[in-house]
Length: 349
Ligand code: ADP
Ligand code: MG
Image 1 (tube, rainbow, N blue to C red):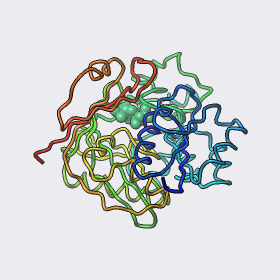
Image 2: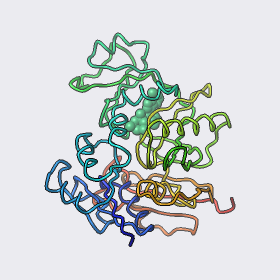
Image 3: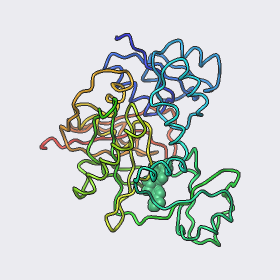
């Protein structure tokens, strides 16, 4: 083992896969999760569980690690900032603060001349009525939403669901007629030093990612714009580590940045098998200050997310040598829960 120990906050599948990649690079991991049953405990030797604001646990975590990263964006800024005073947190806590709020995130994109859907901040029902130009639209909580959670379709200004809790802030986004969704994953090591993956084409079902594939069937123009924007975002944020930009493409072939994930991303799972260096390994290399390795595609690939009961068949199936099954080893199968994924590489590529 090397003398670097990486602390990872969050114990889901992303934390697990980061830990696997770290182990391959001889880097120890300590995973801190607020769920004692989180799957990542199966993938690390050092697992700490309890509330993220528990002073004793924070102290223990800090004493064991040299550098800290996180696998999800919904960690209170206060906590990341406090950790960062003692041990470096990468990406920087300020970046996470900006991105964890959909409103400040979209403002940041527009300030950098990156196109997004039209949107407005919504504090109450009247704000929706005033912004009827954004209808049909999607109302999304500014913070804490994922996999379509915290989102409401608004078809008519007269039809506003009574389930919406206006003690929270939202953004209302104009609904885009989607032709396609893509994502771009980039790992930045420092000023103008990065590795970028080609755009990945994504298909969502019920607002949850279901399929990803490379190459994406898109024009050269869209490909260049999407990779350029991802590079601008990473540079502007002075980012260190892996980030993902999710994009929409509409019927007229306009590109819109939908959201930034300040972390490794589900659509990049196929990079484990398609590239010489995966998004996870690149993230570890960047945040731990290891060497940057030129990242190349070896195979085209497709990934299928195994959601809920989908996993059961795969647990008993046998696989060909171009097929890779990942079981996140979650203790309980739940509807709409990401339980694992399955990647097929195209060997004849
Ligand atoms: P989450 O944080 O839940 O991933 P997203 O904003 O990415 O939130 O929304 C999830 C999915 O819902 C998107 O990938 C897309 O398929 C659909 N969606 C979100 N916003 C819009 C929109 N403005 N127009 C059309 N579809 C949308
Ligand atoms: Mg999304």
